[in-house]
Length: 163
Image (tube, rainbow, N blue to C red; front, side, top):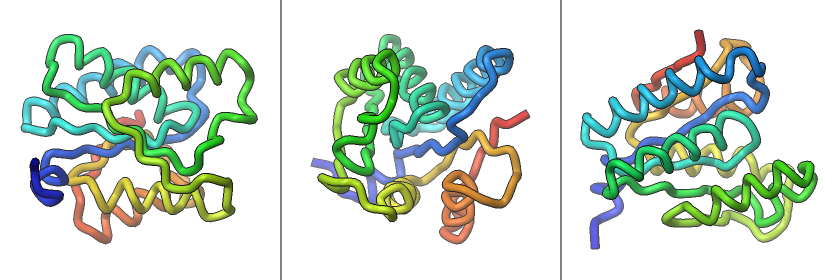
């Protein structure tokens, strides 16, 4: 079994906005896939998604796609609370559960919702990764801003694929 530090050194976390315009989705996905492939080439093998609607789920999709070519890739789903998708529409919930079923590991931080659960998830991602791939528009508010700020405090490299 690998040590936590060795696993962290090989781990990438994702953070990004929930809303991505339909027009931008193909370009964002292409840049994201390129960033994930580059991270793989640099030796990263564990990719952690917070499984939030939007960028996190897109990141999970891309990691699953890479797993088809590179079976040593692992997708870790870091879930803030067990019912994370319960208020999403039915199609989004089905997509979430499909992706979750393809994850190699599930980390559920809380059983029930708590106002701080998303920040706890963001802290977990930063504390367990050696690199952060982000989709951040530069506006200094919200969970993506918080996660990048924490990553920089910890001196993690942050790759922002926002145009």
